[in-house]
Length: 297
Image (cartoon, rainbow, N blue to C red; front, side):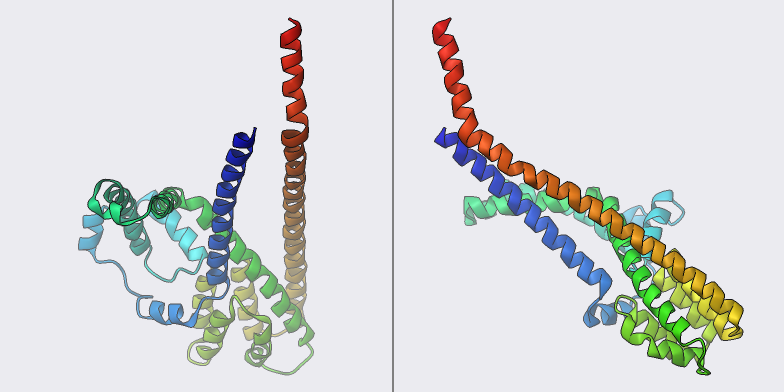
């Protein structure tokens, strides 16, 4: 009985470690997506317009005309990846090859003897986890894309509400957007870049802003700003009011979905004490009852 309990505790702790690691990893990705650090933006700025050479494409077997390339291009565009999609696909293929080689090297080479069994097990589990994330990367890329789109929708809702509040003012649309900067966090860098490029080429700056956001709400917001720049009339502010209502409905829908998911999770967590009670208190009585019936037979 004590052996079964210790084994149950061991597996529960192991599963808890994996769940905690996954939650921490998703939180890290979410923080990077929502507010990218300055060093990452600086590093990407030099590579933003570069494309992988054709010789590298042939070497890695990547085709820009394939369906997979266009699928990943849409996913990474929604995350504002900023680099050529071919770089990600090449890194993914390299990781799929290196992870099994690393695992085999740790198990069969003398290098593996330098680590303790626990550390070696953790390294192999980490390599298997990364391998699985690379193989099934589309689900978590789509999840990150949804989180970024929801964050952008909330911020566009706040900015649009502030623009509607300033509709009676005689300020230029550029000045109004400057006053909306404190309400932006995930799109703050993109909005600052739009405002910096505004007086050089407003149309081009809006097109690039729309591409950087990469979501339907972002495209609608950029088109609304373009319309207000050309004709700041009451009709366009009525259209902005309709868009604000749409954003609010989408935010409420996401909020209700999260509440429903949280209720399911709490329902599952509420069942754990019941299972534990069955294991500790009821299961021994069931075993004693089986022994009693066997003795009677």
